[in-house]
Length: 369
Image 1 (cartoon, one colour):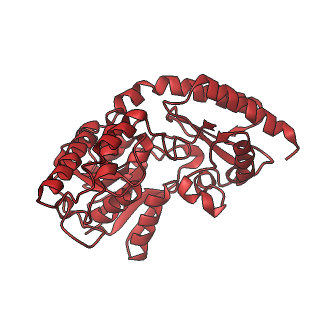
Image 2: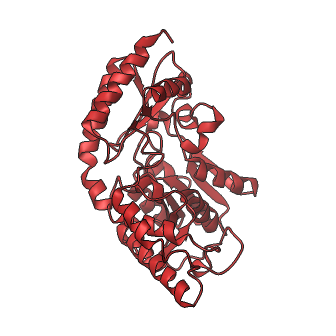
Image 3: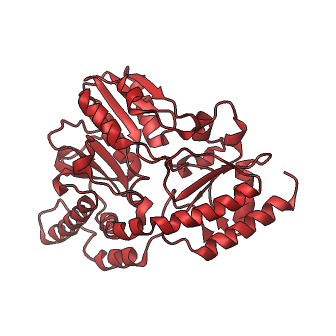
């Protein structure tokens, strides 16, 4: 099996798995309990929080642990929306952001969706035209399907100048780009463990100290009253261990980009068409194959032992064409229906890419689509 769906979830490194196994005997207790078992679980939880915070240049006190990246996005967006009558986002956001925005719009918030034609993000000047002190901006740092990098530091500067709040979905930037929230200038930043080899169902939302954030769940007073519910200590231990490998992931990015370029160049020569803006991360190639349906091509490659996707994993069961590619190329709707996302990580090898190229060649030549 050749795994090329790292933007959906990165494989769990042995170091992360071993750390979780070693902690499993102490992580079962409720970390809010004051007895010895609870204190042991709490110690593990807070150590994990420290590692997560350290990986993004944050203080542990400002990191809220969540049940995954989707919850972190909901908390960051809906939590910061209190007192904001306008919201600015893009038309290529992950569903975790897009649906949170839709909920606020249904509640009366005025929403502006900036276009990302051909994958090119709006300029900071264009963003600034929509900003004032009643505005919340909710935007991704790296696009989950194309890898396009948003100039988030310049967006943050524009938001500060206009007294607007800024939420950043950094789930795909995490482990691909250096993150230092102390210098970023955002108000909230969402992370997901599974994008860096941690367990699914573990996430975090960094919140700038001093902000009045509205919880989106009802319950107890865990996480300093910002996120009720008993955290999954063992998953957070895995998240923290995965954060310890962030520097390794970052140093691997040039090698990964070279492998991405190799498979992309080969498939472009075979007739594929690229879907991407620039700059972009070196971890993903999004390609459309004229005459093919993306899901059928993915299924055929799965039979060859190649694991990849047509887009966001959380939308794959809907059998709909990619909303991201539709928005990027409104005059070329065929692109969305035939798009395939090939995403790589630090585990990807030269052999993986060579085998994947050979499989693509066999599938594309097998029949006239």
